[in-house]
Amino acid sequence: MNQHFDLVIIGGGCAGLSLAYQLSQFGESCPRTLIIEERADYTIDRTWCFWDLEDPIHKDLAPYAWRKFIIKNNHLTHEHSCQETPYLMLPSDIFYKNIISAIKLNTKIQLLTGEKLVDEVIKKDTWQIATSTFTATGTNVVDTRPTKTMTKKDSLMWQSFVGYEVELDSPLFMEDQLVLMDFDSSFKEGLAFVYCLPTSKTKALIEYTVFSEELFVAEQLTASLLEKIGEYTQNTSYKILRKEAAILPMGNKEIEQKEDPTYLFAGLFAGAARPSSGYAFQRIQIWAKECAFELKNNHQLKKFKKDSFIQKWMDLLFITVIKKNPIIGAKVFENLFKNCDAKTVAYFMSDHSTILDKLKIVSALPALTFLSAIPDLIRSKHRLDRSS
Ligand SMILES: Cc1cc2nc3c(=O)[nH]c(=O)nc-3n(C[C@H](O)[C@H](O)[C@H](O)COP(=O)(O)OP(=O)(O)OC[C@H]3O[C@@H](n4cnc5c(N)ncnc54)[C@H](O)[C@@H]3O)c2cc1C
Image 1: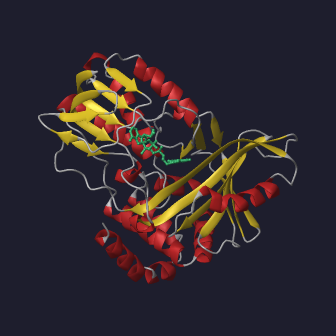
Image 2: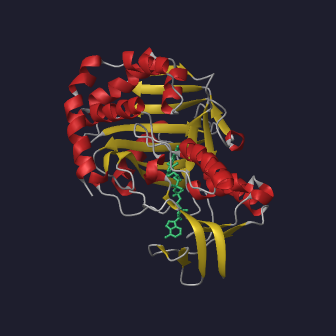
Image 3: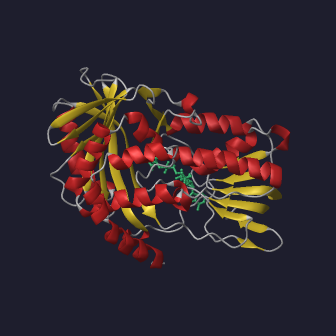
């Protein structure tokens, strides 16, 4: 292959495929696009969850929805309704299958799997793309590769988790309610909790999550996960159907973009991850739609939208409070859901909150705890901005 493309997307994961999908919807007006993806096959490697509000993109693909959720802290269980904004789960295999089918209907897009692009891309007249088996050129490049290995100093906090999808012989799970956070005060190195998504009476995805300054690989959390799975399955025997794990940034220093506006870094580390939760799926979808529109109409790339000043500082303050004291952090989450309706919290977590929603969130939180965390926040923000 030695062809020219209007757009080359490096990495056909969530961000790369989402952008290509939005472009594919333009039919004949779709720019000529090449996607280069390292993996040879797409399998279920993750599940994406998001709240059902303001008509989320690809909501129709999500096969699971919960209208009730539970928060557990200090042996107390609080049940909350999210009838108005159900919590949705989209397994990645369904996303990949549907999105790739839609992309393949548009002959202007080529998806090349099993191809790894290792080097930095250089520009002569156009961007030069070369793997061990092919070369191509591009007018624009969207690069969604994670740029480097992550270290502690790259983010104010990290969300590390490991989860198993398990199947039981007997019907033990309550499939109509998920456990959003079941705090584990015995974990001392961060705020730890179990997240349990039952997809039937016998099947559930159970995850052990830690919010911490440190990064934890799956093996470090597996013993805690197995102990909790024992509790959730009442120590009956179970089959492990699949595993997933991740380390997501919470308040990371964004990738520095190139000066040339025809090259864009995108995805998890380029502004997609929401600082207070690490979640990124819907933010990626919104960016993909806007970027596709901009490419088609103005032949330009569009960066991730920056969070509003208020939202960013609320998020960072939230993280700082949790980081200072995980026990208080658990209480803060417990009170947030007790004092605010689920809809307000869901709107806040999904970037859709109004000033009134934000005020409701602020009034649900302990003012003194948050005010006293401001100096710590300023110090760690300076540290993060200075780190390279
Ligand atoms: C297990 C897990 C669960 C998650 N759950 C949620 C959730 O519930 N809700 C939510 O909002 N977010 C969630 N996230 C966070 C976020 O939505 C995902 O990480 C999302 O996939 C990020 O999209 P991305 O395109 O940046 O990265 P990816 O989807 O990882 O895509 C990057 C792609 O680039 C490819 N690649 C890498 N290097 C090269 C190379 N050199 N050459 C070619 N291709 C390359 C990779 O193979 C990959 O396909 C989760 C993440 C994980 C890992």
